[in-house]
Length: 311
Image 1: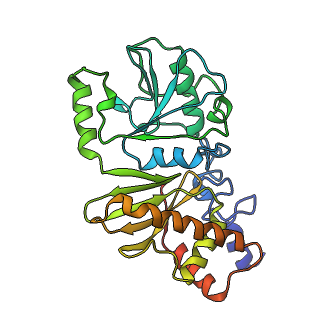
Image 2: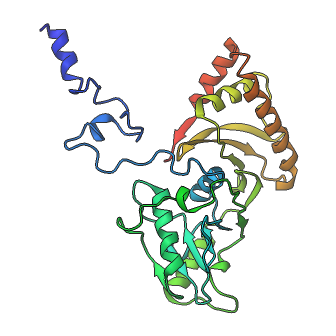
Image 3: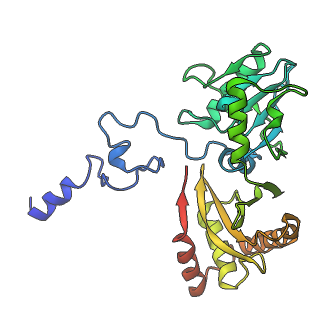
């Protein structure tokens, strides 16, 4: 074996994979830290946990950046108790059943397994049978093997109700005490004004800037091509006082972000967002018959350079 071949052999695994490259399983880790590690990967995250649900974009938004919201879940086999989804519950609990018997399941929890969909399904199962006043701090690793896709009506829409604070944590005419009161105070202090402009699209006022974060359902490569087509045409901004800031990946979906003038009211952006949605749909449709031009490919390269992955 030549010296060059020996060096190459040391840089590849028995499977012929460079240990420093991304693991083929899609976990986002390097191969040597995932399936290339001794004993193989133990807990490989599900890259797109809400795939197959019509509410996928809303679930990603509620999980990642919407501060205070609730939404009623549409169960495929409804029981006597309705279950609502909540962004955050007191003490970051996985689920609670109130004294009046109403049940809530939390999305933004402190710990989770490799499959958020399975964790949520377990929390829903627990909430359906728990006693009033019970709380589930953390979903355990054992129990039901169902996922959300197995217990929800998959084509049902999710209509979030956004709140300006977390007062909905408490039953009417009830004052929080102890750790719950402290948790409520901290949660309220951390809220940024947020409004839903459309499906998967949320405006947030961060102070010096406002932003539009828009969770999109399209495959990343196709969405980037459509965004690049708009960028090359100068049609990517939302209008005066806006600019395209970049995008991030969350749970297998791409979330484009625009910076907005914070002095403009959220209602002023509703029509520009709808018009951008129309332009984007047209650009997506054109990809089937019109390949990207050289200018559009350069624009796509620039968009890719402004991406990050948070999950």
